[in-house]
Image: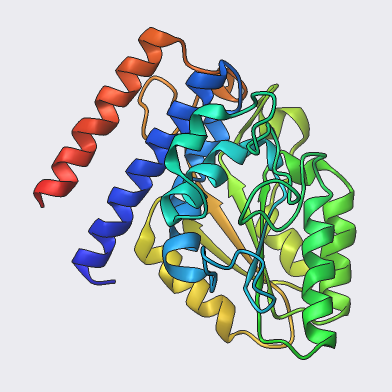
Length: 281
């Protein structure tokens, strides 16, 4: 990846992280930890990978993205706002009565949201159905779904994975955010899903493991995903929960807690300094 493109993506990811904080701080609730761990992924999808058009959010032939771990909606909303699907100012209405930005994505309210999600495990099934529909209708669109590592403790994702292999859904790219923490603590202590790569391979997936904060590795993985034929693809991202805000990083307590005024100010100061450094490059 060219340095100027990487810098652009890093600046956008920093903006997305600011949006996550602005939204959850204004709402006094929400899920910043997992939103921050996936902020780089949201950025890469909406600013490089996905074939979408903010002026036509219902364009029939667009790529689809399903946020199966729907509680990290603040991250998705920040990326959508940065991409131009709706005004940035809307982020501060998160979870308010009458807002189109609810605590979990609602496809009937929010431009750019392709599936209503929130009950963990169900989003990937919807994504697999979308991919099968595209196959049957001979459409070239691709479908992407993001799951959490805690989410795959559910049984339904594995049924969806079996379905995806059976129907040879090579237009489906599953992404697992392996930040190692869930609301109750370390994933491996609550209910270990490991080894994740070997299990996905056993279910018939082609698998790529990456650093989920490295845009070069993302580019390589998504290029591989598009080239593989006959089987679905899974990208397993190793990430840090709360990434970008030092006092939130690798802390399960920030799974579903909004920053107070002092914490918000500290976090924004950190991100503003990071943005200034990136803009100076």
